[in-house]
Length: 140
Image (cartoon, rainbow, N blue to C red; front, side, top):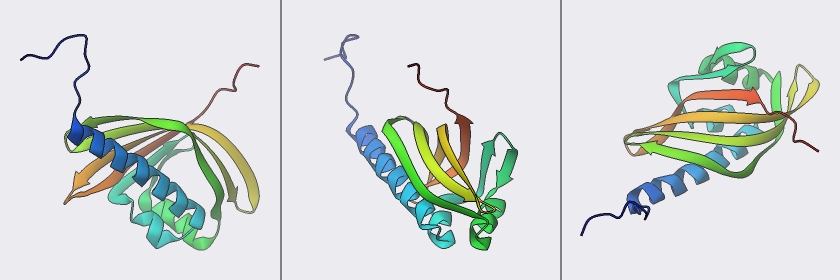
């Protein structure tokens, strides 16, 4: 029969995609902490950009900073499970993430909200855009 308005519909394929994306985001965080340019780049589409307080940076810019050693990450941890919305061959993953980075030798500890947009290409999910914004401090 029809779908009841009060009962959420189960989408096994969507659940599978969400599970894959959660694992993918964890693997990408591990790659970033490894500071391995090839490994990190494997999660990014060629047209990937990151939007942050300093503007828009390309995949090449980001990976060049890592390759040079000017940008290193020593920790990256998601707080709770990410919010994932799948839209066909595209998905949006939003999470709160803490990380420790060293830029030009100076340590930065960040607590940020991140949004990553993934697209599925040839059976693989690749990130095309990342956006980070500082998280407001939790009220005491």
